[in-house]
Length: 137
Length: 449
Image (tube, rainbow over all chains, first blue to last red; front, side, top):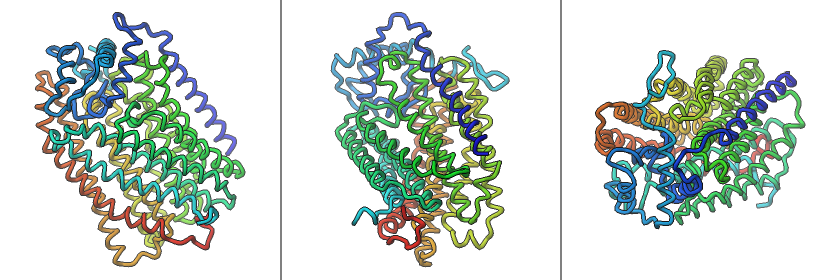
């Protein structure tokens, strides 16, 4: 029995490693998003983490619940770069003022531009199928 | 105290209980941000309190799981582990805890969701875990014909290490520069990390069942092994149900959906079978271990129903990114993980048979208060989440602030019941903690390593 268990365990582990490495290799065959400075956006992700924006905000539903999801804040009607800057510099009813210097703010804006260009997190843009799956409208 | 007199299992369990007490207090404070948002924003309260609360609770589970394995192994085998290494492992954990809180209190963030502290403090955790792997393998490799809980512990320990390393792949620009892959890996990590410590805790639950029954019938049954492999399969592949709306490769979503539907079923069946087979007299002798395991069973049932619904993409569209997800996370962390760990603490403390009737009344009141408060807490979060879900699917959406105002009464109930829950848990945990650090070593070798 021990040998059979070891065999199943090893097979599952091999399958898991194969699946994991398939995901790790995705950047090699994923086309880059046009008009985005990837290096700058990647720095912006570190700024996002440095100020712990994820404590209150979400990206694709991952993060805190006190503030709204910011995946598509960059292109949302009535929002955009000017409003993002205003929110960060002046705060809101619930959001404190963040004194983020320009050298950090620019990569952060590029990062939000990249998340916006990557897709949509608005569930209204998805259609429910009869088999329980969802598809983009 | 000389090194030989230190009981490693109890050392880890007592440290874990201290982290739970801290986590409860921080959780109560963090929940106030939903009621007194204006006041708390002055000090950017949530950005500080949320990670401190989450880290404390995660360390409670990880140290508790470590303590359970050390205590169980010493009771199952007579093989002595390398005590010096276990002490060094504990010291690395203490260094990590101090570093993590130092990092938070200085607002030196920089990590990801659930691990927001400066990533440098992950190194002592990684070293401590490697020492744990060494100590664990040193004992179990000498034993033939493993019961199911050995397999579960091995899986949990090894997968935690793998996932913990994967959790920091973002430090490499190759991963960070591809946002979708990066986010996919982050969800993969979050799903698998929970799966890995669940393996350790469910393994402990199986061991406790056998220990109470004084037989190995549960841990060696074919059904237990079938359940274990199903759990392992889910740990590896079901995390895709977190990312249905992420524009990643579709096969990840299909695999996540299909695998999720197979989840948990065997586990409930085994616990129910076990409950029927435990004689009434035994359940009375080990009253609190039995009660907390049964409570875990109840919470498995509630969270199973919720998890299955949330894994269906059409429903997930309503619940993803809402408080339903928080309810599920809290329901499993407190309802399942903490109940199993408390059951283990009662068992390994060696205190259960000596409890006075007055203390027993306090512990029983605490037990029932925990269950009631947790249910109110869980329900209020679920209703708030459903309300948010309806809002996010609404064609004529009001602003986010208007929606948050509409769910404020529910979040107030959540905060108040959270406070009640913390008091109820503290009643039991503080008594357990005192007993854990004061009870002298048993002369039997049950807890001796």
